[in-house]
Image (cartoon, rainbow, N blue to C red; front, side, top):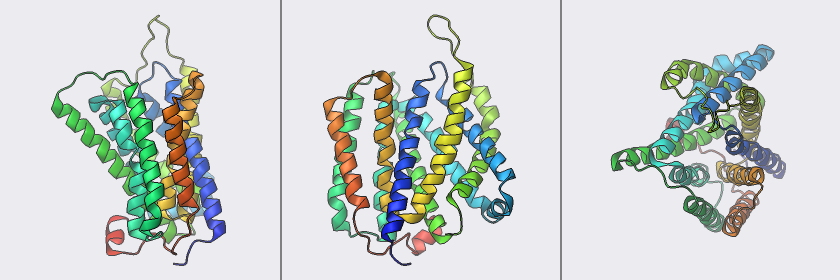
Length: 332
């Protein structure tokens, strides 16, 4: 394939940045819903995503029907890896090894996507990536280390369960890395697929998988709200509004924008833009608390953003997702 044009890079960078800013709301909204478990929020989010996708699909005409008929297996695979199974492993990691450690592991996703993406696409010379990737890695380490230092101690658990939780977090990283690269390769090979339409088809798959897992979630007891210390019941109306925002805006709209970015950027540049979600998520939470982040975290955020900007401004060598035997076998 030919190289990326400057216009493609600009459109892709803008779409990926806005997607990251929207995805950052996923950090904030659960904080604003005391009394509702992460499982309840996630089930509500993905049911809303599936519902809005079903409505849009019903009015989408032949284009969406053709997409579903031709690529339903791929859409289902992406719904599982990029949404449902990814979050399930994330929740298991948080439960067994604690949120701070899990967050540090999940923070590796932009780096794994960027490095493996470049190995497959050859979009950049490795020498040109050393500085920006190092800046991002240092920034992520500083931000998460300070967050870990300020976190409350996690409940003491047997070493075996902590190892299992760590493996679950690593599994979540591997799943989303596969999804990010496979989705980019799919969109590169199918330029006729619209970003919004593909988000709708994946949303249908996500809704189906969530419905299938609903009985298990209900039996776990995690769907029921928990009353606060003073006996007040969690706000059901706020919960409904929140999951609608998560499903419609954070899932459907942001995924559509991410598809636009994935189709127009190298996997490495798109992967680095995932860092925008991390920075935005922390910024939103601190804004909701009405406090400023520690100076060290501000420095960490700055290093992350500088690294991201350096990558998206780098000239490519003409590469997109590579047509290697490994790529064909593993990344659809």
